[in-house]
Image (cartoon, rainbow, N blue to C red; front, side):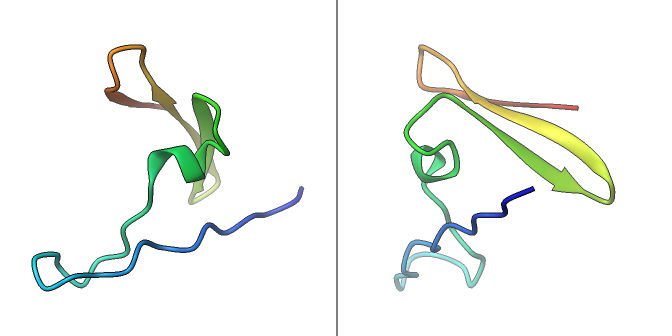
Length: 56
């Protein structure tokens, strides 16, 4: 499986020290991405209303 790691958005003084990503980068301009955690695959989806849904 190819693994692409998006570059995090640069932190500013108002953000925490957590990595921040654009959802569009994670979905490569589409509406859905898969996220792997501890052997489990999760689905991140951008809705038509511009909201994010994360499901197992």
